Length: 217
Length: 265
Image 1 (cartoon, one colour):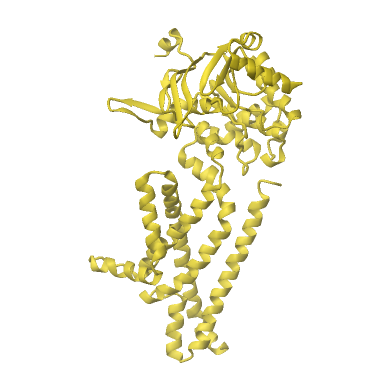
Image 2: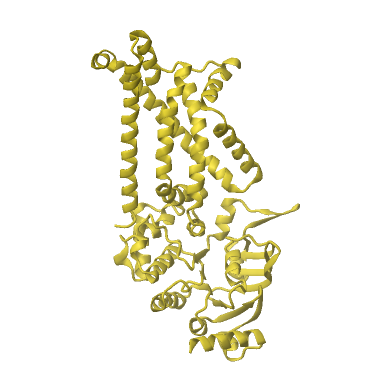
């Protein structure tokens, strides 16, 4: 196993970097989109509610592997060429937005109406109320679920190997078929995923503790 | 324009034929009321009489169904068009609402921000003041409610009375023309009511126009120049506190005052 790491470690690390970059990008793009969808659902306007509901049903109700293939092949069918990495980021973003929107919706609902009423009476715009009053309070409630979604996203990103994005699972596949040592190769990839997950969960806990103490001390 | 509004006595708040329903329940059933500059008007009445809803409709936190609420001569919340009424846009609503400040029963301070930031946030975001300018104003407002020393505290660290005083400072910071108080002392422990009422008395003495929904009959009797008694979504009696408390005309008000006097003993 050590010789395998010695020979291919750099390639795998490179793949890990791609994994993190794609997942991070999707998480960030999915965030405003998720907030937007949550706001649409909470707006009470029939068209907005229905559209946002349909969006969620689609992206939560179909397999992400198939979603990624569609996002990759659909533009090609329309005569557009998408770089696999971009297709991967788009696919993962659209998918995580659906899941994140439910987290934001639950978080925003949990902030009492009086919080925004006080802000409206003082002339704050809707945008300012969302960004400065509602989301900061909702974040404390949403953080555990958001960390969970980030972990899911990183794991889901292994699926973009099917559209030849050179992330860690794809690299592992290449190494496995070149060295005929699939078990060890995939075990190394697994440990890399686990390490990232542990780091992320730890960071989440730390942040949660900091947010809990802010506003009290 | 400004000369015209000075010449014609436009009431601070003018309410005509106000109707509000929740489902098939009529909560406000044709309210007519004027609030003039310098008025300190207390609205009293039993629970469920529509007092708080009236205040919320004036501020358009609840949309009223029929009638008019004019703030300094401008209709709040709705825009009249040849096709009928449609909801006013966000900016228009904010502009018409701007002269109103509101203090809530449950304070609604923002728990994630320190006291000073609670007071300065709107100055910075809605009024565009610099950080320094906003903090100067914020500290001055906290001074008016006697809480300058608590500027760095978070809301959780304050007593109910202190929270309400901060909420008053926050509302005053943006220089409203009229202050609306929705049962400002009802959520407070009895020993904390006095500090909030004395801040409100000082405000009234400064000439602030105030509309106060309250169960504090003593305050209504002594600090107000006008009192309105509401029951079942209507104004049953209106007049000076002396009129209402000493010579109630209606059976409903007599009963209401009787119950209150029994409880006070």
